Image 1: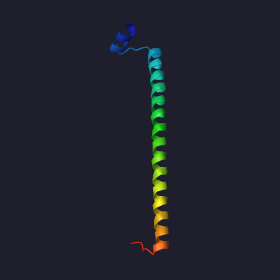
Image 2 (image 1 turned 90 degrees about the vertical axis):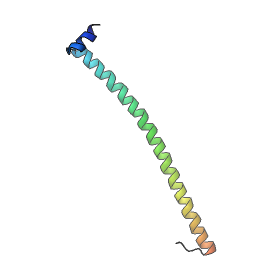
Image 3 (image 1 turned 45 degrees about the vertical axis):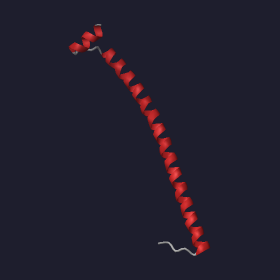
Image 4 (image 1 turned 180 degrees about the vertical axis):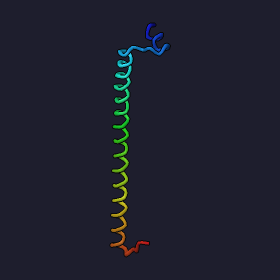
Length: 73
C-alpha cells in the first residue's frame, strides 16, 4: 500500500524503481529474444525454400533447352 501511495504522489523510492526496471528489462529482453529467434528461423526456412525452387526451375529450363531446343523468351 505504501508503494501505491508513493507512486501516486510521485515520490517512488529508488529501490522500487530499480526493481521494476530490472524486472522489465529481463522479461522484455527474453520476450524479444524468443520472438527474434523464431522470426529468424522462419526467415531462414523461407529463403532456403525460395533458393531451392529457383534452382529447380533453372535446372528444369536448362535441361529442356538441351533436350528439346527450347529458346528462352
